[in-house]
Image (cartoon, rainbow, N blue to C red; front, side, top):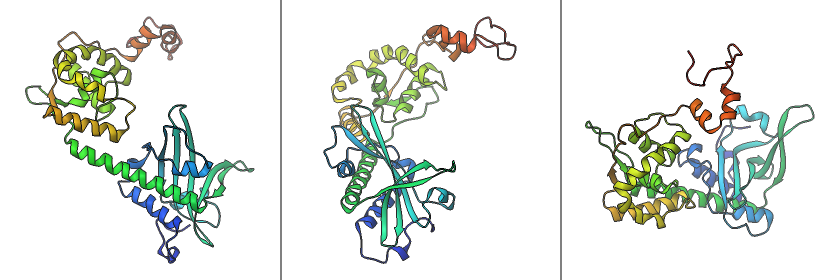
Length: 320
């Protein structure tokens, strides 16, 4: 296996569909690496339809799960005699049925030039694991894969553009304790749906500020949202309530940001001052107490025995 990347010695040939496809993967990685492109579901299904020779189901998406230039440490998972310059994994997801199908691909140099191969890691007769080639993509499949990769890159560029237009999404707390939040963080709590431009982090940040409860877990955010929602409705129900019909959890990231940009224009200033909950209106519940309240049988099994002594505990709070 050669060094990562495109080897000039292997590309001294007229451009081929495979080489164009490899460049499309490289262009995706150039956006910021694997952490930027991974698991971003995009409505592009050219490869799926080329592989199965039929129309894709409604709402099917394609995502790049990972992409990397191989290193010498990957040699055990590369077929002997093959010169792999890029590997990537894609997933096809059909939202209606929660079906997710994956495909792993190697871009490999062969005697007749660059080829793209579907690969599966399987257990070998000697008990070790190793690669098995399923098939080599034909020209129409390669071109379809390129279409999907280009569409995914365009989608990510669109997301970056919409975020740039949206502007700053958070502000620090002021010396007097006041703080402003992006209106989408507030809508996330008001509507009970994930519409914050910062995702789950935006809602958690707002709730931690309002309650003074730092380090909130996912279950804690649900309880805190119920505590904070009435105050937010009192302050911003009229201002933001009319936006509900423009928002949906079914929107992909790009379309959500586009809607938020439209709504931001209506507001003028998208950053809104958020009040803190009055003292005594937030109940901070630790995991043990939550188990005891919501799942008493589980709490008894999980926390009812002192692992150090094997004796029954008297309650499940902090132990002396």
